[in-house]
Length: 400
Image 1 (cartoon, rainbow, N blue to C red):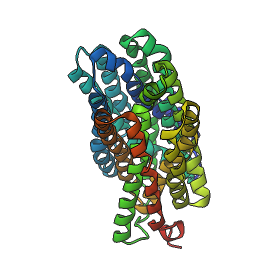
Image 2 (cartoon, helix red, strand yellow):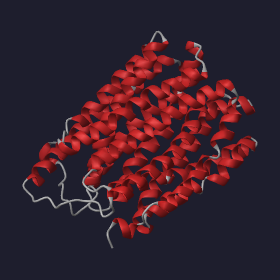
Image 3 (tube, rainbow, N blue to C red):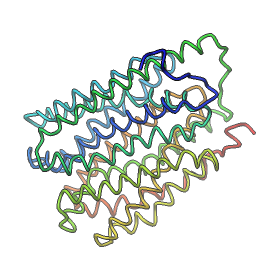
Image 4 (cartoon, rainbow, N blue to C red):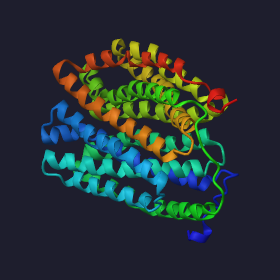
């Protein structure tokens, strides 16, 4: 596809080609991240890792993303940089090569950091491009973008179960080719973004300011951070330790446990896709409130269930809990108009950071107690959804 063949960047219509390209690369990015986590049983055996060391690997790439993304998003709000899009998967490619060939644990951590840098560079501007291509349908666009990531996250366990765990660590090299494909696709998206910037440079830019006072903005952001804490720490428990929990509690074999993780992550993908369009219709606050608090009955029951019901309970948990994040991102963008990159970088960065801190802390807790205790302790986190009551509603955000 040449630059002249790229679809128009008209702000009045949805540019689905760009939306799906961004979502497809989000799928690749998060598939590769998920492969890392889903390969933990093999890495733990190959390197004799403790659960603390396993948690620190998640901490390494997620905290890298957490710290870098807000700065990258804030910088590109002021200085748009389309070239950052194809550069991002180059760091992920490097990380995968290191992960496949690492002779020791320090190089595994280095690989994790490189993958984290790739994600940090990708998310703010890929989210920005999705909003630019939305044609005003911002919730739908954010859901399409995010569901790409969730589908990718759900594919990682299958890739590990059917290719990496049976055949060995060197198989990770084959999945590095996904990053090469992403570099090519994001090169085309970057050209569309460049054309969009050229088309809009001469147009007058309307003043953008929040319809709520700074104190309410600060309080709302603090509440969203608390809600993200409940969501992403619980998801970190599922993503990093759910297969180990099944193996330890029920004697589930590793490949079957990864398949069960795929079911959880598939439910998360479906819930993510639904959250944005529903928020467009009924308001972001309603979706945020229900998606966090509505998870509570299921999370409380999970640690006490048998194997069948443990797997069954994770389906509504994934569906309900995941619907929050698209609504949270668009809510933040409406709370601070004109700061799309900053909000995207901050929220995706927090998602990485809270998940990384949670994984490291829960790994240490599992070593000190048990995996079952970890799932008992985290089952109360969705109760923080009560805080959503204090968020300003849609009418107040829009000044009506």
